[in-house]
Image 1 (cartoon, rainbow, N blue to C red):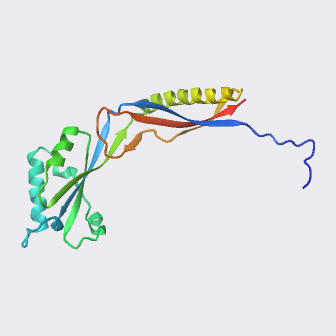
Image 2 (cartoon, rainbow, N blue to C red):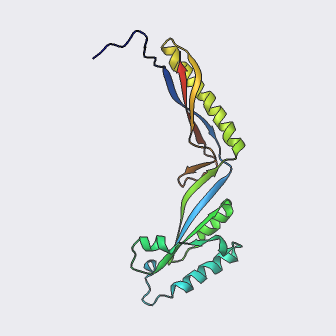
Length: 190
């Protein structure tokens, strides 16, 4: 292996990368619901046609003041489940907790309703505010780590914010829970 010329020196920048976080209570939730209407759920030797079951479902929904046009049918999703019996999926989303509860309660032996996902929607202003707080938290973490090595942190070299705008949560819908907003920050290590 040849030695490097005295004119060429390897300059390697020392860095420290930390995840900064801040917590907030989401106030802008979108609830995603999946409704399965299926003959496989019926134990009736002479079941009504699927079209009648859909009509009955939508009659109950519209009686609650919910527009049936807000539901999107997805027959392909149902077919992909490889059920032998006829059926369909209806997809619905709402920002209203009351509407969510109403939709979840409309069930019959042929109808299965499930909350599939909750989405937290953040305004650009809220995203910026949370990102600033998470970056400040990252700076404090990086400082503590650097101090343990008798070093200091320098300028920020990179910020990775994976969360602006929309954050997904599973199906946990307790309105009092705290959600973490995280950013990964790389600092120069002096």
